[in-house]
Amino acid sequence: MKIKSSTLLLALLFAIPAATQNTAHFDGQTWWNHVKVLADDKLEGRDTGSRGERAAQAYAVEQLQNAGAEPAGSNGFYQPAKFVSRQIVEKDCSLTLIRKGTDKREPLTLGEDAIISTRIMPAPEVEAPLVFVGYGLKVPEKNYDDFAGLDIRGKIIVIFSGSPSEIPGALASHYQTAAERWKVLRAAGAVGIVSLTNPNSMDIPWSRIALNRARPSMDLDYPEFNETEGAKLYLVVNPASAEKFFAGSGHTFEEIIVLGKDRKPLPHFPLAVSLAAKTKVEVTQVESANLVAKLPGSDPALKNDCVVLSAHLDHLGIGEPINGDRIYNGAMDNGSGSALVLDMAASFKKNPEKLRRSLLLLLVTGEEKGLLGSKYFAAHPTVAPKAIAADVDVDMFLPIVPLKFLTVLGVDDSDLGDRVREIAQSQGVKVQPDPEPLRNLFVRSDQYNFIRHGIPSAVFGVAPEPGSPEQKKMFKDWLTQRYHAPSDDVNQPVNLATAAKYEEIVRALLTNIAKDDQRPEWKPDSFFRRYAESAKIGN
Ligand SMILES: [Zn+2]
Image (cartoon, rainbow, N blue to C red; front, side, top):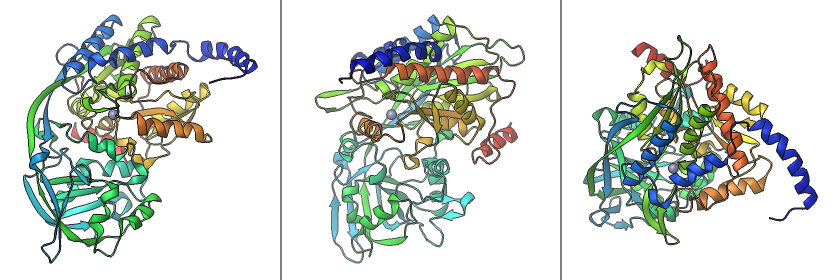
C-alpha cells in the first residue's frame, strides 16, 4: 500500500505515545513468535490426539514453566481425557429420497447433495418420513415451539438452520446445540435431523465443507457426555440441492430462504418424500489432554479462588489439499489465542501484578471436535468447582484491522460485559454485542461450557468498524478463504499493534477480576443465570 509521506509522519508522531500509553506490556511481536511456532508446518495442524498436538503441548508446557507457572492439571500440567473418533466409510453409505405412495427412488450424491454427519453415531439403516419443522426449535422462555401440534414420532425432521428474530441470539444459539435439540427430539420420538444449510449464515462455502467430510468426528468417551442417545441420523444438506426435498410439498426452498434471511416465522408441513439411509462408520479410540497451569494469587482468603484464561490449542490437522497445501495450520484458529495465553504468562512474570485470586491458564484440546476438552474440564475441573470465579476465553480474535471495535458475546449476560466495556473504552475501543447472531458464535467457543456450569464467561474478538464496508469485506473474505483452510497459516497479514492492544485489554480484565472483592455476577435477567442457581443447589 502506498501512503502520502505527510500522513506517514503524522501517523508516526501519534503512534509513539499511543503505543507506550496503551500497550505497556505487549509489543505484538512476542505473541506472533509463539503463533509462528504453533502454526509451523512441523506441528501438522495440531489435530486432537495427534503427534503435532503433542509437540504443541510440549512447547506450551516449556513456555509456561519458563514463565514460572505451576502445574495444575491432574498429571503435572496435563489433564488427560479419552475420546472416541468416528470416520464415515462413504463407499458403504447411501442416501435415497422415496416419493410417497410410489416406488420412485432418487439417490442423493454424498458430498454433492448432502453429508452424513458423524457428530452423532448414525444407525446402520434408517428409513423414515420427513417433516419440515421450520427452525426446529423449542424455547419455553419465549413460548416458542416449532413442534406444537405436530406428530414427529418415528420421523426425521427437516430444519432450516437458524432462528426466528423473536428469540435473542444467545438463547437461540443455546437451543441449537446438539444437547438441547436432542433433548426435545428424544422426548417427541423423532429419529433424525436433516439440516438444510442456511446460505445466509455460511462461514465457509459448501465446496470446502464437502471436501473434508471424511475427516473424523470425535466425542468424549464417557457415558456421562452422551447427549445424542436415540439419534439415528444427522444429515447436512447443500443449499444448492435442498429443493429436492421440497418437490411435491407445495412449498419451495427458495421461499424458506427468503423468510429465513430476515429470521421470519417459517411454515411447517409434511414433505412428499421419505428418506432411506445406509451408513457405515469406523470407530477408534483417541487420547489427548488439556493443559492447566497456575499463577498463584497472593490473598490468603482469595487465592483458592481462580480466574480462568482459556484457549484451545488443537486445530484440524492434515486434510484434503487446497492449492496443493494439506496442512491446516490454524494460525488464527487458535494459534492466536494459545499464543496469547503463553505471552500473558510471560508478561505477568516480567511485570508482576499483585493478583489476589489465582490465575488458571487453560489450553484445551478437542475444541474443533465440538468444544470437547473444555466440556471435560468444566465437568471435572482440576480445582474445586466452586473456586472458578470466571472464565475469559480467547478464540481466533482476528487482529487484522486497527483495533477500534470489539464484539463481546453475551455482553449483557454478566457484569463481565461491563468490565470489558469499561477497560476497552479506556483504550479508545468500543464494545458491541454480536452483530451476527445467525452464526451462533455464542455456543461455538469454549466459554460456553463454563457458562453451562454457572460460571460467568466472556469471549470477544476484534470487529470491523460498523461504518466501514472495506473492513467488513476483509472479515468476510477471511472467513470465506482462510477460516478452516490451509491458508490460515503464518503467511497472512496480521496487525501486531492490534494484537498488543487486545492483549492489554485481556490483561487488564484478568487483573480486574483477580483483584476485585466481588466475583463477576450474572445479570438478574440473563437466561444463563439459571446454571449458576442449579450449581449452587447441586453442591
Ligand atoms: Zn475452528
